[in-house]
Image 1 (tube, rainbow, N blue to C red):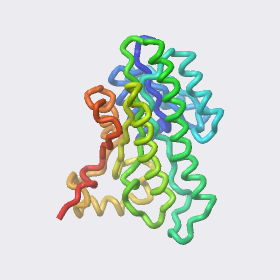
Image 2: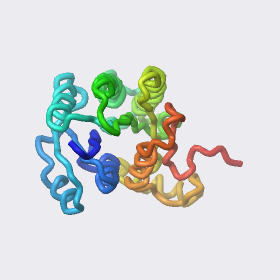
Image 3: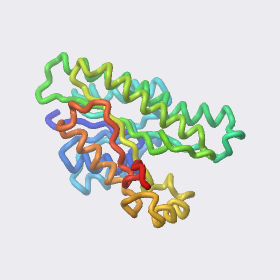
Length: 256
């Protein structure tokens, strides 16, 4: 495989699709992945934009699916240069903190944080193996997509906040472990990004943005997150392994 290969989970729509498009337009062969059996519409759209890609079904919360995804990519393309762990879910029903159910907690953390940990583990093992093979121009990296919810309290979706905070520690751990192998690991925290997931809160967040909750007074776009991923893939920030990139319009700034 001459092109560098990037796996982007949760890439049938939203932020993941934006990331996949950005990487594809910048020369990567993109492995699109999600839980649906097929994604012909997305693949066709990508290919109309001259993006080389393939769709591989994967439920990241399923151990066999995760292994199959990595094994198929390694077997078919002989390298994995970038893994973007983007797949995630919101609670099916928002509940006050005192009403969160064990079932909702387990579902959200199982998909958003437990699965991401083991995706990082699998990616790390494959990347180390490829490093040992001495592949040409091989500088692999892992990029985890979390959220401003990693540090922002939302009392009607507490399990979601906890799941995103766990991603931050997972990123730190793997950045530490993989530094000796020359494999950087990063975290991106998107803010108010215009996707399907933001739908129920669009009016609320739009009003907050108009009032100045973010210095940049607009919703973010999936491409904004894609551009941040591309910057981390450039190799120019590798000495900053473990770094957090806030793709949030300045929400993280403490302002008076």
